[in-house]
Length: 384
Image (tube, rainbow, N blue to C red):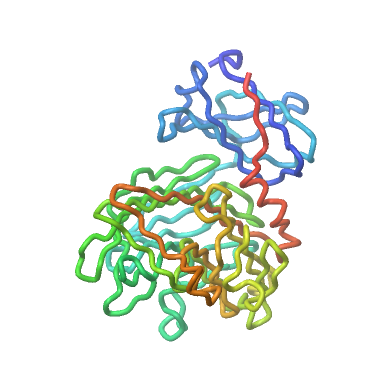
Protein backbone atom coordinates (compact mmCIF):
# COMPACT_ATOMS: atom_id res chain seq x y z
CA UNK A 1 0.00 0.00 0.00
CA UNK A 2 1.46 3.36 -0.98
CA UNK A 3 2.25 5.86 1.76
CA UNK A 4 0.05 8.51 0.13
CA UNK A 5 -2.96 6.28 0.88
CA UNK A 6 -2.27 6.47 4.61
CA UNK A 7 -2.44 9.35 7.08
CA UNK A 8 0.33 11.61 8.32
CA UNK A 9 0.41 12.20 12.06
CA UNK A 10 1.87 15.12 14.02
CA UNK A 11 2.30 14.66 17.77
CA UNK A 12 2.88 17.59 20.14
CA UNK A 13 4.48 16.98 23.52
CA UNK A 14 2.51 19.76 25.20
CA UNK A 15 3.85 20.98 28.55
CA UNK A 16 5.74 17.80 29.47
CA UNK A 17 8.77 15.88 28.22
CA UNK A 18 7.69 12.59 26.68
CA UNK A 19 9.80 9.48 26.90
CA UNK A 20 8.52 5.91 27.01
CA UNK A 21 5.02 7.36 26.56
CA UNK A 22 2.33 5.15 25.00
CA UNK A 23 0.25 7.05 22.43
CA UNK A 24 -3.04 5.73 21.04
CA UNK A 25 -5.26 7.46 18.50
CA UNK A 26 -8.43 6.48 16.68
CA UNK A 27 -8.09 6.51 12.91
CA UNK A 28 -11.10 6.81 10.63
CA UNK A 29 -9.14 6.87 7.39
CA UNK A 30 -9.60 4.95 4.11
CA UNK A 31 -7.29 1.95 3.92
CA UNK A 32 -6.22 1.91 7.55
CA UNK A 33 -8.58 -0.90 8.51
CA UNK A 34 -6.67 -3.14 6.09
CA UNK A 35 -3.64 -2.82 8.34
CA UNK A 36 -5.16 -4.70 11.29
CA UNK A 37 -2.71 -7.36 12.47
CA UNK A 38 -0.16 -6.21 9.87
CA UNK A 39 3.30 -4.96 10.84
CA UNK A 40 3.31 -1.17 10.50
CA UNK A 41 5.90 1.51 11.08
CA UNK A 42 6.03 5.24 11.67
CA UNK A 43 8.76 7.22 9.92
CA UNK A 44 9.93 10.50 11.43
CA UNK A 45 9.65 12.99 8.54
CA UNK A 46 12.52 15.15 9.82
CA UNK A 47 15.08 12.49 10.77
CA UNK A 48 13.99 9.45 8.79
CA UNK A 49 14.05 7.33 11.95
CA UNK A 50 11.65 4.41 11.93
CA UNK A 51 9.74 3.02 14.92
CA UNK A 52 7.26 0.18 15.40
CA UNK A 53 3.54 0.91 15.54
CA UNK A 54 0.42 -1.23 15.79
CA UNK A 55 -3.09 -1.06 14.31
CA UNK A 56 -6.01 -3.00 15.75
CA UNK A 57 -9.79 -2.73 15.83
CA UNK A 58 -11.17 -1.11 18.97
CA UNK A 59 -14.36 -2.24 20.69
CA UNK A 60 -16.25 0.36 18.64
CA UNK A 61 -14.84 -1.05 15.40
CA UNK A 62 -12.71 2.04 14.79
CA UNK A 63 -9.03 1.42 14.15
CA UNK A 64 -6.67 2.24 17.00
CA UNK A 65 -3.05 3.12 16.20
CA UNK A 66 -0.57 2.76 19.08
CA UNK A 67 3.12 3.51 19.42
CA UNK A 68 5.69 4.48 22.05
CA UNK A 69 6.81 8.12 21.95
CA UNK A 70 10.43 8.68 22.97
CA UNK A 71 12.67 11.70 23.33
CA UNK A 72 10.18 14.47 22.59
CA UNK A 73 10.83 17.56 24.72
CA UNK A 74 8.08 19.75 26.14
CA UNK A 75 6.79 22.18 23.51
CA UNK A 76 8.22 20.22 20.58
CA UNK A 77 6.34 18.32 17.91
CA UNK A 78 7.17 15.47 15.55
CA UNK A 79 5.55 14.38 12.28
CA UNK A 80 5.31 10.78 11.13
CA UNK A 81 4.19 8.98 8.02
CA UNK A 82 2.50 5.60 8.41
CA UNK A 83 3.30 2.60 6.24
CA UNK A 84 3.46 -1.17 6.25
CA UNK A 85 6.74 -2.66 7.43
CA UNK A 86 8.56 -3.85 10.54
CA UNK A 87 11.61 -2.95 12.60
CA UNK A 88 14.29 -5.64 12.50
CA UNK A 89 14.96 -7.48 15.74
CA UNK A 90 11.68 -6.56 17.49
CA UNK A 91 9.31 -9.39 18.36
CA UNK A 92 7.09 -7.14 20.47
CA UNK A 93 4.59 -8.32 23.08
CA UNK A 94 3.98 -12.05 22.81
CA UNK A 95 1.35 -14.06 24.71
CA UNK A 96 1.92 -17.79 25.17
CA UNK A 97 -0.89 -19.99 26.47
CA UNK A 98 0.13 -22.58 29.02
CA UNK A 99 -1.88 -24.51 31.63
CA UNK A 100 -4.33 -21.89 33.00
CA UNK A 101 -1.70 -19.21 32.51
CA UNK A 102 -0.61 -16.72 29.87
CA UNK A 103 3.13 -16.02 29.71
CA UNK A 104 3.89 -12.47 28.54
CA UNK A 105 7.24 -11.67 26.91
CA UNK A 106 8.56 -8.33 25.66
CA UNK A 107 11.04 -8.79 22.81
CA UNK A 108 11.57 -12.37 24.05
CA UNK A 109 12.19 -11.25 27.68
CA UNK A 110 9.77 -12.65 30.28
CA UNK A 111 7.79 -9.79 31.79
CA UNK A 112 4.93 -11.46 33.65
CA UNK A 113 2.56 -14.41 33.79
CA UNK A 114 -1.23 -14.05 34.07
CA UNK A 115 -2.70 -16.80 36.26
CA UNK A 116 -6.41 -17.57 36.03
CA UNK A 117 -7.07 -21.10 37.30
CA UNK A 118 -10.60 -21.58 38.61
CA UNK A 119 -9.14 -23.14 41.77
CA UNK A 120 -7.68 -19.73 42.69
CA UNK A 121 -9.62 -17.07 44.58
CA UNK A 122 -9.05 -14.59 41.75
CA UNK A 123 -6.87 -14.01 38.65
CA UNK A 124 -3.52 -12.31 39.20
CA UNK A 125 -0.15 -11.54 37.60
CA UNK A 126 2.99 -13.15 39.01
CA UNK A 127 5.88 -12.76 38.67
CA UNK A 128 6.18 -9.15 37.49
CA UNK A 129 9.69 -8.20 36.38
CA UNK A 130 11.36 -4.80 36.38
CA UNK A 131 14.87 -3.43 35.75
CA UNK A 132 17.61 -6.06 35.52
CA UNK A 133 14.93 -8.75 35.55
CA UNK A 134 14.19 -8.13 39.24
CA UNK A 135 10.85 -9.27 40.60
CA UNK A 136 8.98 -6.22 41.87
CA UNK A 137 6.01 -8.09 43.37
CA UNK A 138 5.44 -10.92 45.80
CA UNK A 139 3.34 -13.94 44.90
CA UNK A 140 4.28 -17.59 45.04
CA UNK A 141 6.73 -17.29 47.95
CA UNK A 142 7.30 -19.26 51.12
CA UNK A 143 6.17 -16.51 53.47
CA UNK A 144 2.79 -16.24 51.76
CA UNK A 145 1.37 -19.04 53.96
CA UNK A 146 1.68 -16.93 57.12
CA UNK A 147 1.78 -13.30 55.92
CA UNK A 148 -1.41 -12.14 54.19
CA UNK A 149 -1.55 -15.08 51.80
CA UNK A 150 -4.26 -13.32 49.79
CA UNK A 151 -1.85 -10.55 48.70
CA UNK A 152 -0.91 -12.20 45.42
CA UNK A 153 1.29 -9.83 43.43
CA UNK A 154 -1.02 -7.75 41.16
CA UNK A 155 -4.79 -8.24 41.18
CA UNK A 156 -8.33 -6.83 41.58
CA UNK A 157 -10.34 -7.54 44.76
CA UNK A 158 -12.63 -6.04 47.40
CA UNK A 159 -13.54 -7.06 50.95
CA UNK A 160 -17.29 -6.35 51.28
CA UNK A 161 -19.50 -7.06 48.27
CA UNK A 162 -23.06 -7.66 49.45
CA UNK A 163 -21.42 -8.53 52.81
CA UNK A 164 -19.27 -11.21 51.14
CA UNK A 165 -15.47 -11.14 51.53
CA UNK A 166 -13.80 -11.12 48.10
CA UNK A 167 -10.49 -9.87 49.52
CA UNK A 168 -9.31 -12.65 51.80
CA UNK A 169 -8.86 -16.36 51.17
CA UNK A 170 -10.78 -17.78 54.11
CA UNK A 171 -13.19 -20.68 54.24
CA UNK A 172 -16.19 -18.40 53.56
CA UNK A 173 -14.46 -16.03 51.11
CA UNK A 174 -15.96 -15.51 47.69
CA UNK A 175 -14.14 -15.91 44.41
CA UNK A 176 -13.59 -13.94 41.21
CA UNK A 177 -14.07 -16.66 38.61
CA UNK A 178 -12.88 -16.15 35.00
CA UNK A 179 -15.63 -16.71 32.41
CA UNK A 180 -14.21 -15.61 29.09
CA UNK A 181 -11.41 -13.85 27.24
CA UNK A 182 -12.89 -11.15 25.02
CA UNK A 183 -9.43 -10.33 23.63
CA UNK A 184 -6.12 -12.19 23.94
CA UNK A 185 -3.72 -10.74 21.44
CA UNK A 186 -0.05 -9.80 21.29
CA UNK A 187 1.48 -7.19 18.99
CA UNK A 188 4.55 -5.18 18.12
CA UNK A 189 3.67 -2.42 20.62
CA UNK A 190 0.89 -3.63 22.92
CA UNK A 191 -0.55 -6.91 24.11
CA UNK A 192 -4.17 -7.20 25.26
CA UNK A 193 -5.61 -9.55 27.87
CA UNK A 194 -9.31 -8.73 28.23
CA UNK A 195 -11.30 -10.90 30.63
CA UNK A 196 -14.88 -11.27 31.82
CA UNK A 197 -15.19 -12.51 35.41
CA UNK A 198 -17.96 -13.55 37.79
CA UNK A 199 -17.81 -12.42 41.45
CA UNK A 200 -19.33 -15.29 43.42
CA UNK A 201 -20.06 -16.38 46.97
CA UNK A 202 -18.26 -19.39 48.39
CA UNK A 203 -21.33 -21.42 47.37
CA UNK A 204 -21.14 -20.18 43.77
CA UNK A 205 -23.97 -17.64 43.78
CA UNK A 206 -23.23 -14.72 41.43
CA UNK A 207 -22.93 -11.29 43.08
CA UNK A 208 -21.85 -9.29 40.04
CA UNK A 209 -19.58 -9.46 37.01
CA UNK A 210 -16.61 -7.44 35.83
CA UNK A 211 -14.49 -6.70 32.78
CA UNK A 212 -10.74 -6.52 33.45
CA UNK A 213 -9.07 -5.21 30.29
CA UNK A 214 -5.27 -5.20 30.59
CA UNK A 215 -2.86 -3.67 28.06
CA UNK A 216 0.88 -4.33 28.34
CA UNK A 217 3.28 -2.13 26.36
CA UNK A 218 6.55 -3.06 24.73
CA UNK A 219 9.06 -1.00 26.71
CA UNK A 220 12.71 -1.74 27.51
CA UNK A 221 13.69 -3.56 30.67
CA UNK A 222 14.28 -0.40 32.75
CA UNK A 223 10.58 0.51 32.53
CA UNK A 224 7.21 -1.18 32.05
CA UNK A 225 3.60 -0.04 31.75
CA UNK A 226 0.44 -2.04 32.32
CA UNK A 227 -2.94 -0.32 31.87
CA UNK A 228 -6.21 -1.59 33.32
CA UNK A 229 -9.67 -0.53 32.16
CA UNK A 230 -12.00 -2.04 34.75
CA UNK A 231 -15.80 -2.22 34.81
CA UNK A 232 -17.97 -3.42 37.70
CA UNK A 233 -21.35 -4.59 36.38
CA UNK A 234 -24.46 -5.12 38.52
CA UNK A 235 -25.60 -8.05 36.41
CA UNK A 236 -27.32 -10.08 39.16
CA UNK A 237 -29.13 -7.45 41.23
CA UNK A 238 -28.01 -4.50 43.33
CA UNK A 239 -24.37 -4.61 44.49
CA UNK A 240 -23.43 -3.04 47.82
CA UNK A 241 -19.77 -2.18 48.39
CA UNK A 242 -19.21 -1.81 52.13
CA UNK A 243 -16.98 0.71 53.89
CA UNK A 244 -13.89 -1.32 54.80
CA UNK A 245 -10.16 -0.91 54.57
CA UNK A 246 -9.94 -4.47 53.26
CA UNK A 247 -9.74 -3.72 49.59
CA UNK A 248 -7.66 -2.58 46.73
CA UNK A 249 -9.65 -2.14 43.56
CA UNK A 250 -6.26 -2.53 41.94
CA UNK A 251 -3.75 -4.03 44.33
CA UNK A 252 0.02 -4.60 44.45
CA UNK A 253 2.04 -6.54 47.00
CA UNK A 254 5.68 -5.61 46.43
CA UNK A 255 8.72 -7.83 46.67
CA UNK A 256 9.59 -8.31 50.39
CA UNK A 257 12.94 -6.52 50.13
CA UNK A 258 11.08 -3.39 48.94
CA UNK A 259 8.95 -3.16 52.10
CA UNK A 260 9.09 0.25 53.78
CA UNK A 261 9.64 -1.64 57.04
CA UNK A 262 12.85 -3.05 55.53
CA UNK A 263 14.43 0.03 53.92
CA UNK A 264 11.99 0.61 51.06
CA UNK A 265 9.88 3.73 50.62
CA UNK A 266 6.26 4.67 49.96
CA UNK A 267 5.61 8.05 48.31
CA UNK A 268 2.40 9.68 47.13
CA UNK A 269 1.55 12.56 44.82
CA UNK A 270 1.38 15.05 47.70
CA UNK A 271 4.79 14.19 49.13
CA UNK A 272 3.59 11.77 51.79
CA UNK A 273 6.26 9.29 52.88
CA UNK A 274 5.60 5.78 54.21
CA UNK A 275 2.50 4.48 55.95
CA UNK A 276 1.93 7.25 58.53
CA UNK A 277 1.63 9.84 55.74
CA UNK A 278 0.01 7.74 52.99
CA UNK A 279 -2.32 5.11 54.51
CA UNK A 280 -5.94 6.18 54.28
CA UNK A 281 -4.95 9.38 52.49
CA UNK A 282 -6.30 10.46 49.11
CA UNK A 283 -3.83 11.00 46.28
CA UNK A 284 -3.57 10.92 42.48
CA UNK A 285 -0.84 8.28 42.57
CA UNK A 286 1.20 6.21 44.98
CA UNK A 287 4.65 4.68 44.52
CA UNK A 288 6.56 1.91 46.28
CA UNK A 289 10.33 1.54 45.81
CA UNK A 290 13.25 -0.36 47.26
CA UNK A 291 16.25 -2.55 46.46
CA UNK A 292 15.82 -6.04 44.96
CA UNK A 293 18.95 -8.14 44.41
CA UNK A 294 21.09 -5.00 44.44
CA UNK A 295 18.93 -3.03 41.99
CA UNK A 296 16.86 -0.01 43.07
CA UNK A 297 13.40 -0.45 41.55
CA UNK A 298 9.93 1.02 41.99
CA UNK A 299 6.31 0.45 41.06
CA UNK A 300 3.59 3.10 40.93
CA UNK A 301 -0.18 3.01 40.51
CA UNK A 302 -1.96 5.93 38.77
CA UNK A 303 -5.60 6.84 39.45
CA UNK A 304 -7.21 8.48 36.42
CA UNK A 305 -9.21 11.71 36.70
CA UNK A 306 -12.29 10.03 35.16
CA UNK A 307 -12.52 7.49 37.98
CA UNK A 308 -15.35 7.61 40.52
CA UNK A 309 -14.50 9.63 43.65
CA UNK A 310 -11.14 10.71 42.27
CA UNK A 311 -8.63 10.91 43.87
CA UNK A 312 -8.83 7.55 45.58
CA UNK A 313 -7.95 6.63 49.13
CA UNK A 314 -4.93 4.32 49.47
CA UNK A 315 -4.68 1.12 51.48
CA UNK A 316 -0.88 1.14 51.63
CA UNK A 317 1.23 -0.49 54.31
CA UNK A 318 4.88 -0.47 55.35
CA UNK A 319 4.83 -4.29 55.06
CA UNK A 320 4.46 -4.09 51.26
CA UNK A 321 0.79 -3.63 50.33
CA UNK A 322 -0.46 -0.85 48.01
CA UNK A 323 -4.01 -0.59 46.69
CA UNK A 324 -6.73 1.86 45.71
CA UNK A 325 -9.97 1.94 47.70
CA UNK A 326 -12.74 4.49 47.02
CA UNK A 327 -15.30 2.87 49.36
CA UNK A 328 -13.40 2.96 52.69
CA UNK A 329 -13.63 6.68 53.51
CA UNK A 330 -15.32 6.32 56.89
CA UNK A 331 -12.85 3.65 57.98
CA UNK A 332 -9.77 5.48 56.76
CA UNK A 333 -10.80 8.80 58.29
CA UNK A 334 -12.22 7.17 61.45
CA UNK A 335 -15.43 9.15 60.95
CA UNK A 336 -18.75 7.30 60.45
CA UNK A 337 -20.24 10.44 58.90
CA UNK A 338 -17.87 9.92 55.94
CA UNK A 339 -19.19 6.43 55.25
CA UNK A 340 -17.97 5.50 51.76
CA UNK A 341 -20.22 2.53 51.08
CA UNK A 342 -22.02 2.54 47.75
CA UNK A 343 -24.80 0.60 46.06
CA UNK A 344 -24.52 -0.10 42.34
CA UNK A 345 -28.09 -0.61 41.14
CA UNK A 346 -29.18 -3.55 39.01
CA UNK A 347 -28.04 -3.03 35.41
CA UNK A 348 -25.64 -0.18 36.23
CA UNK A 349 -21.90 -0.17 35.62
CA UNK A 350 -18.96 1.54 37.31
CA UNK A 351 -15.83 2.22 35.26
CA UNK A 352 -12.18 2.75 36.28
CA UNK A 353 -8.90 3.44 34.50
CA UNK A 354 -5.56 2.66 36.15
CA UNK A 355 -1.94 2.55 35.06
CA UNK A 356 0.87 0.57 36.68
CA UNK A 357 4.34 2.00 36.04
CA UNK A 358 7.49 0.01 36.83
CA UNK A 359 10.66 2.07 36.92
CA UNK A 360 14.25 2.30 38.13
CA UNK A 361 14.97 4.08 41.43
CA UNK A 362 12.49 5.89 43.64
CA UNK A 363 9.61 8.11 42.49
CA UNK A 364 11.91 11.05 41.79
CA UNK A 365 14.44 9.04 39.79
CA UNK A 366 11.62 7.26 37.97
CA UNK A 367 9.96 10.61 37.05
CA UNK A 368 6.66 9.29 38.34
CA UNK A 369 5.02 12.73 38.64
CA UNK A 370 5.98 13.57 35.04
CA UNK A 371 4.80 10.21 33.73
CA UNK A 372 1.47 10.62 35.49
CA UNK A 373 0.76 13.32 32.90
CA UNK A 374 1.42 10.83 30.11
CA UNK A 375 -1.64 9.04 31.51
CA UNK A 376 -4.05 11.90 32.25
CA UNK A 377 -2.71 14.54 29.80
CA UNK A 378 -1.43 12.55 26.82
CA UNK A 379 0.26 14.35 23.93
CA UNK A 380 -2.05 15.77 21.29
CA UNK A 381 -2.07 14.14 17.83
CA UNK A 382 -3.18 15.79 14.58
CA UNK A 383 -4.07 13.53 11.65
CA UNK A 384 -3.92 14.64 8.03
